[in-house]
Length: 341
Image (tube, rainbow, N blue to C red; front, side, top):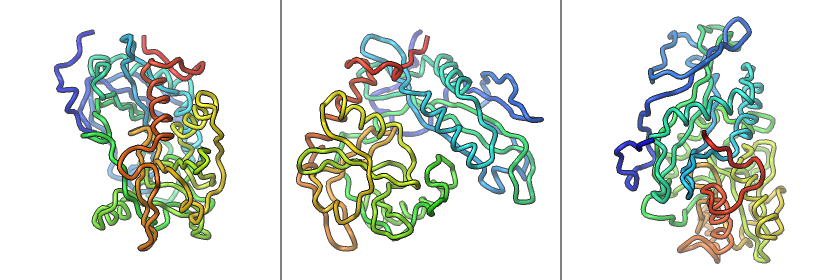
C-alpha cells in the first residue's frame, strides 16, 4: 500500500486524524458486533456517565514498520489484559481480550498508509479506550458503554534526540493506598495535571511521586515507571500496589535477564536508596526509556554518575535491545510481535 505524503521525519508527538477507527457499543448487557467507521466524532448525552463521574479507561500501544517491511504491533495481548483489569475496577463491562487484539489489528490494517516507514523514527500510536455513554445523574456506574480505537502517526517523543531529564520529588500524591493507581483510568491522569504543570513552571521535566502512606518509597511519575541501575549493574524497579503495571517495564526486565544476562528485580525502593544508584530512567510506551540525569529532593540534588549528559551505558543497552526487538532487528520472544496482515 502506498504511504500517505507526510513529512515523517518531522512529525511531533501530536494527534493527526487518520481515516478509520473502530467502534463497539455495550447495551442491554452485551457488546454489539462493532466495526470500522470513518466518523471521528463522538456524540453523547450531556449527562453521560463519563462526563459526570469520569468513568473511562484507556490504553496506549504502537505499530511499527520493521526493517523487512512488515507492519507489527508489540504485545497487544498485555494491553488487552490491562484494560480488562482497569474496566473491572471501575465497574465497567470487560471488552474481551481476543476482540481487543482483533480491533487493534483491524484498525491498524485499515490505516496502513499512515504507518510510518522504517528508519524515520516515527510510529503509529494506537489508543484503545472505553467510556460510559448513557445519562447518569446519581453516583453509580453507567449501563451503556462505547469501546473505540483510533490511531495517529507520531514522531519520536523527544525531538532533537534523547536528553537526560531533570525531575523533582513531588509534594503531591499521585494515588491513594488501595486506590486506583494500578489501573489506566483517565481520572488518575487528571489528578496529575496540576502537578506536572507546576513542575514545568518550576523548570523540571517531570515529578517523582512517593507512596502516599509514608512518603518514603518511590512509586512512579505521572505517566511512566521508574527503572534504576545500581552501581554493581543490577536493574531494579519499584514495586507497589499503586503503580501502573507497565508493559514496557515488564519487557525491559525480561530483556535484561534473558538477553543481557543481568540481574533484575521488582521490589520496594526507598528514596534514600536512590542517592546511591548509577543510572535512572523512565519507561513507557511513548519513549521506551527516557534517561534521568538529576532528581531534586527539596533542594538536595541526586546526580547520577551515568546519564547526566547522555543515556547511561546500561540504560542504552536496554533501550537498543528492546527497540531492536520491536523493529525486527533482533529476534523477539514468542508472542511478543504480532504482524498486521
